Length: 106
Image 1 (cartoon, one colour):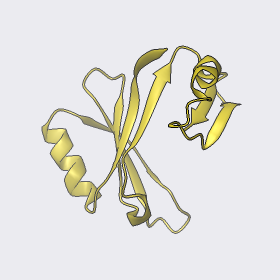
Image 2 (cartoon, rainbow, N blue to C red; image 1 turned 180 degrees about the vertical axis):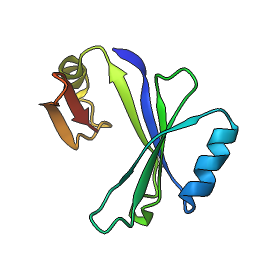
Image 3 (cartoon, rainbow, N blue to C red; image 1 turned 60 degrees about the vertical axis):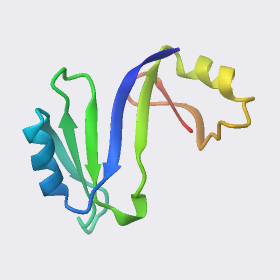
Image 4 (cartoon, helix red, strand yellow; image 1 turned 45 degrees about the horizontal axis):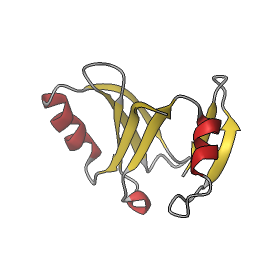
């Protein structure tokens, strides 16, 4: 089932200062984007040295929680195995993505 962590997103008040800090630890800035049309809430993707996973920095005060993306062997199979577990709350059941695979959100 489990393969790896794809991404961890964390909140920071000072996104540039945080990006500089993680660059000192060996991560590299991979991309930047805005979450909104007013360009108020920014995302910065920091690539780990192995290049397989990312730390995403976000400065939206409405999202002061960590988000973790994990890669599993088969999203639909994992959903079927976990859907009856009352401790797992599904935000979105499996749906196709643009890369030809599936995504689910819990």
